Image 1 (cartoon, one colour):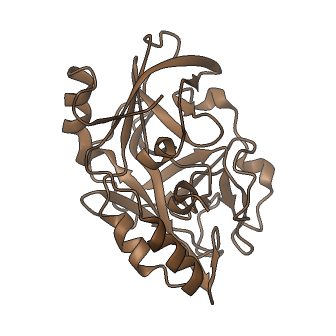
Image 2 (cartoon, helix red, strand yellow):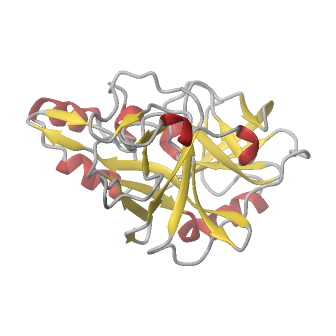
Length: 276
């Protein structure tokens, strides 16, 4: 099992569609891409967010596993990639750690490792995007705020979760949750079951990595974080992603605002480049 998938286990594993309430029709979670044009689709699975005409922010693990990222899709149009800049503090989990967790069912070392990684990357596009407005980065505290999440990744319901084996690209869905954790690197929320849940309570799944965590500011949606990883529930030695009670974490962009600005201003030299 590849490390990227484990990171959105680690969002359930990699990056997915949205996992929804059992008692709400799936169609209520469906959305059109035009409702948030700054959402970026990565090849195969995973997302990013357009934050400047020529720059996309995403989770580092959403691009690190790919052999090459030559183009991404913004506003329904493929856009050529010039380079990828991974934060120098990003750490990939050792395969031995993953193998040990899969064998024993004890994921605590893996979760602790994930929490210390700077899981963020920037994608520089070959040409500026002129037909989609970038999303602004939210710099305030998100603690206690209701956030909007979205993605095309794995889907399921909170009682059953979603499959570890995909598919990790499905229909585009959105939902909401409330931020209950705010740390230096991370913001996080718990997938609550009814009746405690929000009307469109949701969590992310495999294939949603790098997707936006949005906060409403007046009439504008600003991006407070990008989906990164989650503490999946474990029964015996089996991981059960997407179940009620799991906690999802997103990279808190306010913590990385200076790095983002310096990287964009320097043309991509404030980190390590990944292959394209």
